[in-house]
Image (cartoon, rainbow, N blue to C red; front, side):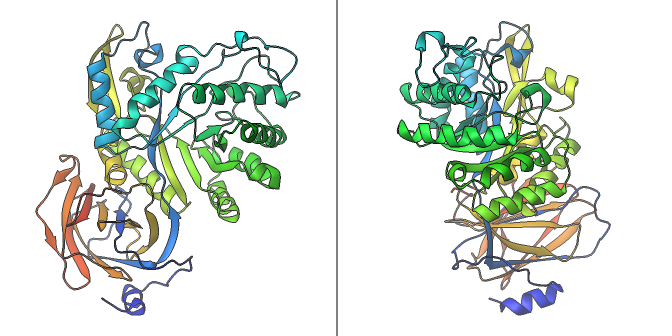
Length: 468
């Protein structure tokens, strides 16, 4: 094993500062080269330092609507047979390795205020049927045997009669939902106050309102014996998210109930991605990116998504990455230019089959191997066209490289890491999807591999295939 200083000196890189932990037996490394970003043609040198650690990864996921929601097919009724449901769940949570879901719940649970006392429920005025709530509980129960671990609600819109002037009425509504999930045997581990509070469609809810809600809902949850942590603000972008999250977290009473900071990727200033990262570090709270529909249905569009995933993790400290949709009707691709991991074909609302999109396979180069609990460690490249992230888990050394230009040869050197004798490459490219290739051997403390253009290659240690 090389000395730590000699490797970084050889690469011509400065060793960055960072928190430290003891040595782990294995590591996962993701090296991402953005398509067309670099013009270099020579060898690429990558250095991985296992003694410098960053965030703990919490998984990959997507939002979902329930199987018979007319939004899926853009027509009613929408029908997906039980056998097809099971196959889609297998593709998402077993094969792709997603572990998270954000159910898309809506209003009309309490269309008229139940009474004037927010501390007394009139349960006859609540309606949790179908996609308002209960069908999402059914979906979570159905998906968990396939690999789903984390599920949290983020209401798309609140009841029309709710106002900022009476936060206790919202608290009563949210608590009713949380109690309903527990009564149905699936207590929520996380709950987001509202989807995109900084977007006009959601009603523009202020930071002060959110702080009041977090404190009051948190207190009432604990009084009811509920353990859910709150996700805030789950906003339209990092700029709007920082406006609200910074105000909530300045209050110690509110802060104790916050389990994650979350934002989406629709507009906003890039500097606020860094401000959200720093706010999360300051308070030792993970940061999640919980929605983006960046992916086009093409391979080139999916490459753009993967570059974004890399930057979120490597530059902005994100520990969980959620795509907009896990499955959706193919009509959305033509209308909006984005889509889902599993694109479903319908004929007048009836299921006709599905297609696994390029984003599905490229995301799998992360989600199948970087499992919940893996820790990102420091990694640097000698070429700015090679973007590097590195992870270590309880088993299996994993390296992923994505080439952007001409055919390249990358050599990865390690320090502070116990290494296996060989690696099994798995590759996604314009013509390959998770293709397993012949093993490559470790030479000293380095491994070298040739990379075809615009490809993602994951090197797996000989003890397994990335299980967490």
